[in-house]
Amino acid sequence: MRRRRRSRAAECAAVTLLLLLSAACGSRLPESDFEHATTAARTAPVRVGVISSTTSPVGGAAFTGPRDGAMAYFDRINARGGIDGHRVEVRLCDDGGSGVGNNTCVHRLLDEDKVVALVATTSLDYAGAPRVSHARVPDIGGQPIGPAYDTWPHLYGIYGSLAPRDGTPGWDGELYGGTEVYRYFRREHGARTAAVVSYNQPASASYARLVERGLKAEGYRVVPEQVDFALPDFRAAAADLKAQGADLVLDALDTHGNARLCEAMDQVGARVTAKVTNVQNWTSTVPEDYGNSPACRNALWVTGSSRNFDDTSDPAVREFRDATKGLPTHSQWQLEGWAAARWFTEAARSCAARGITRACVDAFMDRSERFDAGGLLLPVVFERLAAPPKTRRTCLSVARWRDGKGWITQGDMERTCFDVPQLAYRP
Image 1 (tube, rainbow, N blue to C red):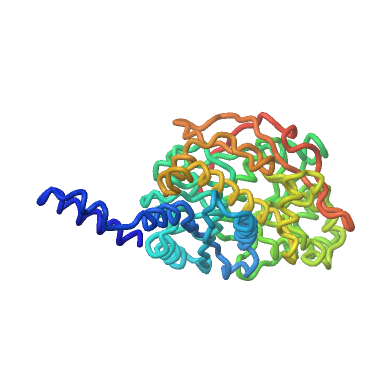
Image 2 (image 1 turned 90 degrees about the vertical axis):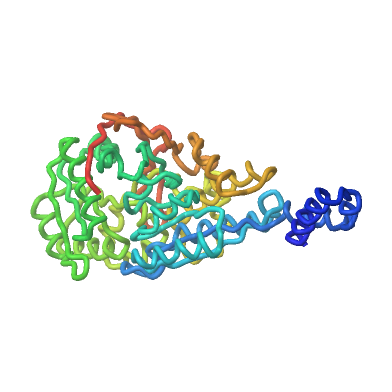
């Protein structure tokens, strides 16, 4: 009816100009038709896209956490009447972990499904990022697995960015990271020798190089260990880090790789102060994933930029856990996907009165300042600095695993902060 009414309006305008019969034209549609169209516009569904590498080479569950968290948030929003009456319609796309698959997803969601925004993107190879940016489709709360969220405008990663995002990664092709994690373990736990275990895969190896530089800047002796992505020999890596006397182990591995590394460490008798992993491996499946490595399992620590999903003393975490109680497992990436969906919802709600469009949502995101998802995230900023900062005050969330207790928060993430150097690396 809405399209028909536009056609009638155009026809009426022509008749008015030619025959000066505006009164007759204006009376052809009953008032009820206008009321119906207005109501439909006010309650039209809002369509969003979620891209994840569900069937990626690193395993079926490796990249689904943000998707599941975002879906849980949108389900709850819809159960409460949607965003100011607009139901959120989610279109999912599995890119298979390949650049070709990612471009296919981007084309389908942007050009065919006409989504207003992408939310909680989690792609092993975000090859379609330039297309998303050129289409000016806001990508909200994606996981920065590669450099896309520090490269392109209209892409808003879950942790923010200080980079210009002008089509070149970071600043002249260089990204920057801080040393807060390494300073924390040196100051709080006396660690001095650190092993860094990674795959010979570009994203993993790049992240490992940054970790190694940061450790050296904080005065550590560094023991690099790289394993083959297809046929990793974790036992050899574990034996070497034991021989080198590592008291801290960090990695750029997926959950499966971490579990195999831990098993190898128990087998060779490598005991460390902390086996530190990344946010992707911050999950409730530790007892199953590390079932054959009790010593390493109880030395697991994790750091990130969001509140521990196991800390149900926090009301925002309790809300997330209540909404996701039907899921068989929980993870930090689920919580961050939930936060990404909340971020989109706030943007869409700000636009509801004048229309939830790509441009309006993107404008809201572009001026986002210190978004924290109700305390679930450390405040997120997008500053587009002309030059990279040499130092930065950075806070972090820290938790450690204990059998029977789960992930135990270590201190207040808003107070566990350090002024640390920012080190350059090439992605």
